[in-house]
Length: 219
Ligand SMILES: C[S@@+](CC[C@H](N)C(=O)[O-])C[C@H]1O[C@@H](n2cnc3c(N)ncnc32)[C@H](O)[C@@H]1O
Image (tube, rainbow, N blue to C red; front, side, top):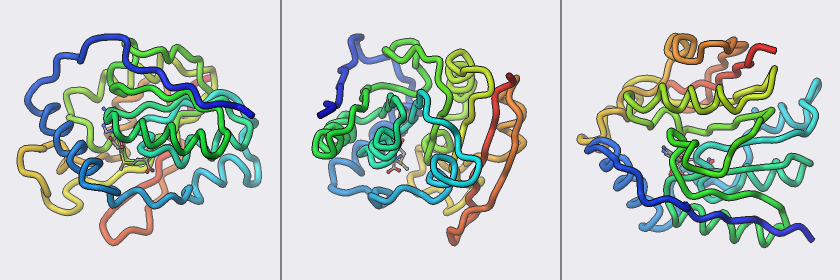
């Protein structure tokens, strides 16, 4: 049976500024309080379509940014993908490891920051990046680093499937986390992901504005 691989951060904690600390604390709070509200345990149909649907991508190497408790990383591994998955919060990574172990799925789990991939053992190249509501919560000043990290690790023609909240979806639930009010827009992604093409924008089905974005790295 395949075994999950968990890699602890080999480096000391990165220097985070005040806004990053606020985001970190807020996310930690969700995981330490119990099951976070987004942790449905269900793989979204948009990812299922990309993996199993008409014109599905052939299995390759995948990197999940903000994997949470690992539902989608395990799903990808069970469908033949070689998966690396990263999350900022240690408790999420621990739960993802347990989930992968229980499923007998080989997932490379990394505890670390999706905007600091160079500090992690995640060299790629990757054929698929999956981000479910990670990028849209990242402070604005760290987003170029996120885009550059993915771009450096993208195989020619790689896809990025991203779900994100639009700007000001629910006000600002935690006042000091200003970036959570910024959300993500198609224009922002076009501007930030140089060398990628925004192939599709599909509104989500939530009661507030959400979007599924599909981007393709130039071949
Ligand atoms: C909305 S949750 C989704 C989790 C998981 N993908 C799921 O579907 O259940 C977003 C996740 O991104 C993680 N995250 C936020 N910022 C991050 C960062 N800079 N680097 C890595 N993970 C991050 C959070 O800890 C959280 O687990």
